[in-house]
Length: 186
Image (cartoon, rainbow, N blue to C red; front, side, top):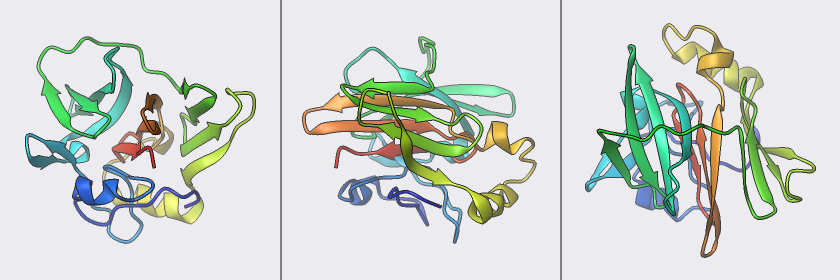
């Protein structure tokens, strides 16, 4: 694993993680591989336990992303705000996910076929790796998922949303079976 984004080892108390510079929600851990949670009506909501986070997109409301979660042929939709509060949606407005998004000159893009997020400080002209899981850590993670199928499809960073905030920006990444990755403004 490379990059400064931490991994989760148990169900995460989101408020505890928000004090850290970078936060991972429903992310991978090499040692334990347990899911993380999102706050939902005062309770933790584990989107990874609900299914595979297959896409996310901007809802066109300040600080809201639409998260698509699929499991056993069923799709659920969640609205997640920039503080990571999740709300289940019964009648979502489907939008188009993006593999790249920017807040000013800061841009992020996803690999699409690997667990990797790239960052650009120059409006997308050049990119470097911001976060990734590869090599032995990726292979170990892939083996923890029963009936994974094509890892490049089911265990990959697929879409990204970047929101400008009062103190910087936040980043959300749909990581398939590995859930929703979140980077706070710190």
